[in-house]
Image (cartoon, rainbow, N blue to C red; front, top):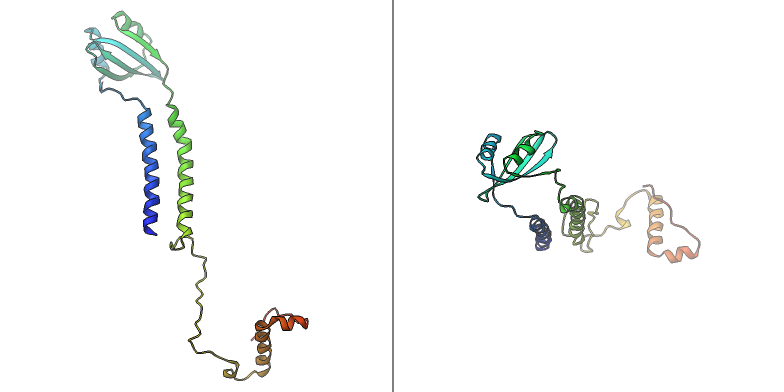
Length: 196
């Protein structure tokens, strides 16, 4: 039973690992980007070391991504200045202004599908655990009654003393339970309960 639990758990972990691997494989790999501040950026622009810049406007901030003339990439955040794109063009920098990028399609897909898959997997896992009967999960309502063996001493009506009328009625009920066909032919019905 324990081996089956570990096997099921290993399968679910493998599925999650494959999903994460596919997500990383789909997302593009980026080169190393150097983080700089606004002052360094303006110094590099004045020195003519900046070749290309992309400005992404997000509220009151420009997310700046650029490439030096030696091919290295840099990035920074600076406050939005309407004159910045024109000033950069005057310095010979190729400028592109873009809107904030949309998140990749797979993030929305995983955001909706992954919780559903995890919920279905959890339900499936719980059902697998309860089928074997060896697990303690979901067994709180099962009867703990034990079957008495014939080896133990039997108690008969001869061992009961007193209350002869009650004894006779109870003997009739027991007889009815042993041979119900005989009594049903006579039209008798078993009593709903017996008060002792």
